[in-house]
Image 1 (cartoon, rainbow, N blue to C red):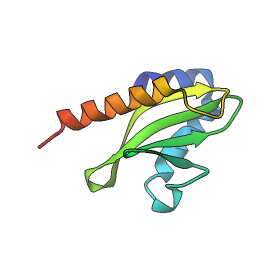
Image 2: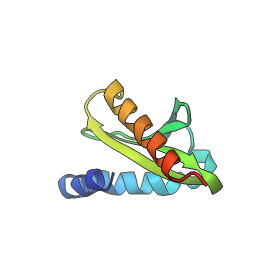
Image 3: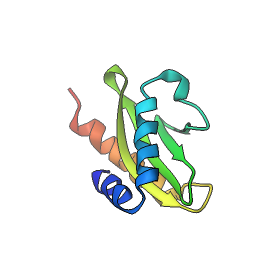
Length: 101
């Protein structure tokens, strides 16, 4: 995820700023719906930013309402490719397994 954000910052600073602002807004419950955010099922959500390319950050909630961003993509389409959703779910499961108490 850090690599994705670093590349976004270098290639498109305006979209990077919008994504960071969107992530900050997710602290507030009223932003947990469209157009900023959308539930993908099984606890996974997407942060959406529309620009020249659609920028999406896939994330989930953990204890104490913390948000963990697990995958980022940019594409021209309106849908998220299945392989990217699969990658995000795998990373979410991995994170949950590694942080079990």
